[in-house]
Image (cartoon, rainbow, N blue to C red; front, top):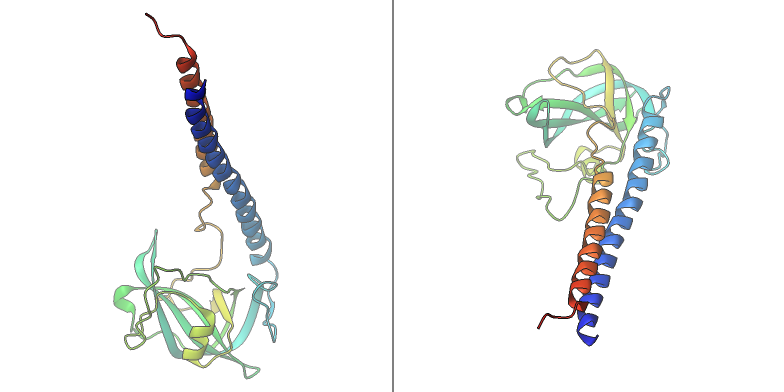
Length: 225
């Protein structure tokens, strides 16, 4: 009987680990679905004026509109999209009619158009407030001298452009610039693979438990003389 203890413990621990991973993915799925629902609920709302002191949590994805002057003060964030390929997001300083200076994520340009002239001057635009979370341990340092950025960190960009720490992801602008492709906030590019992970981890837990049971039953059988 003692020879069954080690494989039994091994089987229980392995199953418990796999079940805990599956349960963690269940929580992540709920969080991701709530996150996506929050985006969908807000991005299509009627736009309002930009709040004086927007909150990064309460006002995330808030639909806004503003009128003012698009400047040529820009930051270029290196990106790659499935449909457009590699290029840059253009983050520009925008001076509103009320005298404020905020940031606009104008959209995408190809690599070769990084330093090409763009539509500036009087403009009316609508979009969504956003505070992207794009920095992790693998994110390179920005090449400030070459104006090549690797993340949209709102406070850092605001300091570089001399604006309020407010970023509007443009959805529409008038006049529009045909050389810039807007990349508005939506949920199409946000992966949600947690259901697959749930099935995988729970499936592995079932297989692990069955294999343990099979092994224990085989060990209990008396050996033939």
